[in-house]
Image (tube, rainbow, N blue to C red):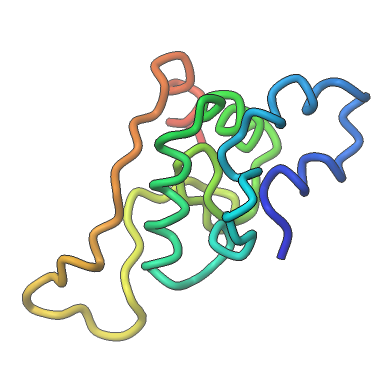
Length: 121
């Protein structure tokens, strides 16, 4: 699997459209596994969201993902499934009567200027 920014790089965005912010992205770190951002595992998704929460270019990443209608993965701290942002994801099968603390995903706030765009995604 490729990291979110590697996918952006592979798109033909007309040169500097992605490169203006991509080098500052936290997912470009040497210790970041690309599969975290596209995993089905709740622990991996939580780790990816925590990485995004500390990212200085979170807004640019999320804005690009919303515009491209990313089909899946963690982008800009938000989880995308089937081209839509989802607030929560649960394990397969029947939900437990008492929620497991490890199943709670971190909440990464959507930047104010993107809230309207995000509400339509």
